[in-house]
Image (cartoon, one colour):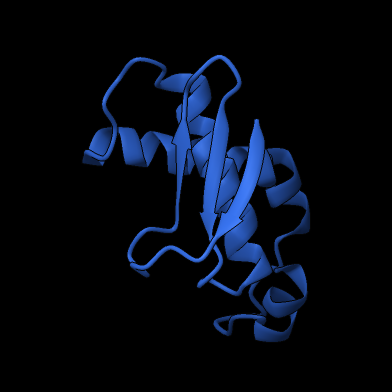
Length: 100
């Protein structure tokens, strides 16, 4: 898939994908977080992989694409290994920031 950056007028649209012979993804540059950009692209890849020929945008397909993106960017074994453990009853905020 080709990823193209556009400043989409609406900030409510993070990205979109088009499933044609050479699929492409359009990403909204209004979202400046690199982490969010990666997630948006992975989410759209999920739509391209799982939802070809299906109308998306409903809760089910969006949740599926979110789960795909999460697993692609951070597989469960890596999450379990690297996610900072709480220190007693306190969250390790510094560790969580570094993890991100």
